[in-house]
Image (spheres, each protein chain N blue to C red):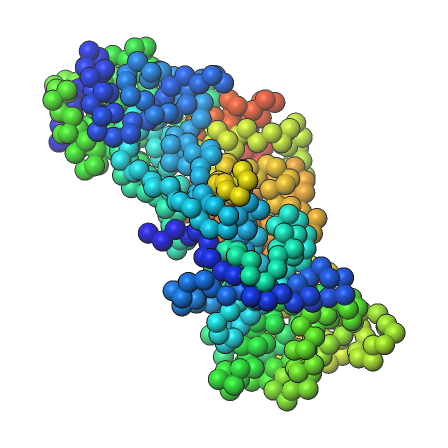
Length: 346
Length: 279
């Protein structure tokens, strides 16, 4: 199927139409700063996500706080129905790719997590290509691309260079999957077919975007980590870490969570909330024993889960190079530098 | 799609105080729905999440054997909010169970083997399940000799005392109970578990060892078993780690590439030797 063009003047009616047919999630301004994904009903509330949303798209499929069930006295009162009829508009390719790995986590292991899986099954992901990757991004160093299509149903990119323009100009919409093609057909009345020139210019823009990014070599880092599990280098790279866990909250692949009950009288809800391996309470046994009692062990867990354990269990690193942990760290710890330091282990 | 986070409703049918400190109780649970009883298909070595709405959930090893029909047993030490509430619960109280979870002891591999069971302290619960299963008349013939050593700090900390007496008297199992230090009124064996195992010296020939106990007991038992000739693949242990989901997603019990809840809690020493000691 040929790509379509969503002209800037059609954006508002397009968003209206999409929001009428499904729950539409797009970047909106967050009071805490930057943008986050939230449900929108009109184009006016969509905020430009340059260079990227502060929290990743995981918040759509795996909300920071989610009710698993509600109870009254000692019985289940209700289990929330999951509405999988949703469209994500404006996620970056790094986020879309990371969600395919989360599909393995939440859908695998012989037990499906219905909350995550139901949302993913129905969702149409319209990703926004990056023409201006930011300096902390490194998707091309971990197998991704600013125009990547893994986990993407429709890839949007600016017809004119600079997709980060505010308001966005005309967008080229390319179907990647059948689900994406069906979505474009559904809303074709608000789109026009792309001209050959518009479609052809896209390859040029993708090359230019990739060329802006420095490619780092992380090969061999798994072997170095495995062999250097007890290396003092872990202390060195962790020394300035505050243990705040911000890196894990902004990460699109960090998926650890807690389950707790919130009661009011004899009724309440059992919720799950994001949790993090960076906290000592995360692994504390009832006996008082803690298998990861030191910060170096917790940082090692974070890096090794992404760059050593995930390659064993999922045949990929669990890092999409979105650079959010680099931007969020209050003491300027940079995962790229930490990996480089570990690679230099003798 | 079956929702793995929803506990099945069960009722506390009976409560047994297990130790002199009165901080370990065994809860006999019966299913409120017939279909849940039928669906709860488990083998010794597995665990389940006990759920008290308003207090949360805790992963606990299943102490009953599937040969004991119609109910489940869980021995629970009073430690925190949930277990304290559970200890304060009388028969008739309605709670929840989510499971069975994790992998059981390797029953297919155990068939036709001589079995050595080594346990210390409170970790004996899933081995109570294993011994009850092994000694069931329908199962006993499928296994070779059964030797067991079970130790506690002192007599008052030994669990399942009526069963211990039966097993000590049984010809189907060579069962030894021991306590760490001499105590007035105790006429039985005295000695730390690894020492007693060494003294008894069970043959490693065609044998597999099931070992559950505190880290310090494990640490000193493994060299004894290796010295007796047990291969690392034939030393089977059960790990504990903090858990929440119990299905390999929440990340809490992750050790290297493995999740204790999903890939374990039963691992061989050969497997554990290759993993980081983060448990």
